[in-house]
Length: 526
Ligand SMILES: NC(=O)c1ccc[n+]([C@@H]2O[C@H](COP(=O)([O-])OP(=O)(O)OC[C@H]3O[C@@H](n4cnc5c(N)ncnc54)[C@H](O)[C@@H]3O)[C@@H](O)[C@H]2O)c1
Ligand SMILES: O=C(O)[C@H](O)COP(=O)(O)O
Image 1 (tube, rainbow, N blue to C red):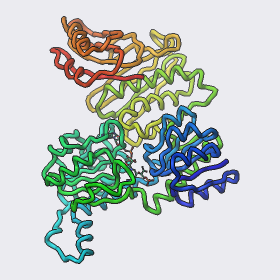
Image 2: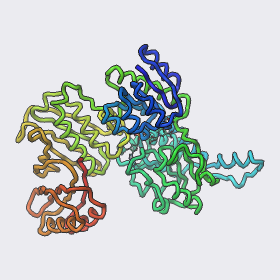
Image 3: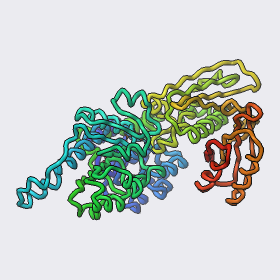
């Protein structure tokens, strides 16, 4: 077996690989994409950090590649979709650098509170300037954390030790877990409005890309201080520059940049910016942790064993795949539907498997359902293997029940999700091995869950359905099918429309204006 290491990792990780006996390691740093394409066909595994990009072109040229290892958390430099399509397992090391990143975050918070970076430069430039660098204390200030995951939680603990009030926005954080950390979970706008310091700890996804820009800076406190040790691009760099120049933002601590390496940025000309070259994970301890973790998982993949931190593999034995595939498809859609319509903090997920399916080990189904449910907030890291672990870490209680008894169908899978806003439910079955939803939030249904859908809860009264059709038609969107559910005449009802493509946000806004329509959600089940 041959493993190519493209970014500098700890020798301890390389030792783990070579001590396996049948593994040879080549360390080749700073290769271009072309150079990797040329040699990748000779390797069974490749290991990177954040510098080297493993692109679709590289993966397509990788004829015997079985594993891509990321000695760290973020896999945004790896084309995971291309790897999955090619059957290459992507593994990462999600926990080994948590403390390192949290500690650098605290270092930057302190540095920008006390002007450490600029005072250091000034003194080394020959000036003894004390009054210019008067700072502020952390005690009594409010820290707003965006993304209360592993690193966000560790930052919260440390901020509490500085007597800061800590508030956080994270649609998937458990209120209970946050409470135990002394953190108040709130909405995004409140974090923007109330914080003296804001620190970012979520993955870069299409939802988080540039989620802090001009409009968000405008509602923040004057003199707010901003830290980003997560991913460049979550904060709009141009808007940040302007907010600092206008005095709205007093200071920023930045470890990550939209384009890396980044050695030239208008931000670097500002005294108020303290910047580090993506050093969050760069401690001796973290580098040993992540290199060892990823090396063991690479070996497991090469030996065909279960891995502990896979990003893209289903945890179902090959021989069970034919039986499980239709069920996996069904639960993925049930999770995806709930994940896209709930939008509230999840406290509990109860899944009941009824009928034939109950005779199997349903763990992969529960895992797949959780993946479908959670992946919309945690795109970067939730997968078939780690979904239960992710749910547990967020304090989400998962209850699995099985019974051979069924009522109307040979197989029924019923999911009830409890959030801080109440309960939501979906029941599904298979019809000719294809998924069907037979009940949603207590409404009887019979629908094939696929493609693009609009979910419109409303009051059961005349003219609503007509108006829905008119507005959707006016936006030139074709309705392919409609399913209606109601409990009582004149009471609550739901309309689920399948449509031929995605809809612009304005359609949802216009539909929500119809008298009697409660809320409208767009769902894409692929
Ligand atoms: N600077 C560095 O060297 C360094 C080191 C380690 C990790 N990181 C980065 O830090 C980030 C966090 O890592 P982690 O290990 O804590 O990950 P994590 O998965 O444990 O936590 C991420 C959190 O973000 C939340 N989240 C997702 N989408 C959100 C949204 N739209 N709004 C608010 N919250 C949202 C999730 O619910 C989750 O709790 C990642 O981007 C990772 O790549 C950077
Ligand atoms: O996602 C991560 O783990 C960090 O961004 C660290 O990246 P690095 O391994 O390149 O330091």
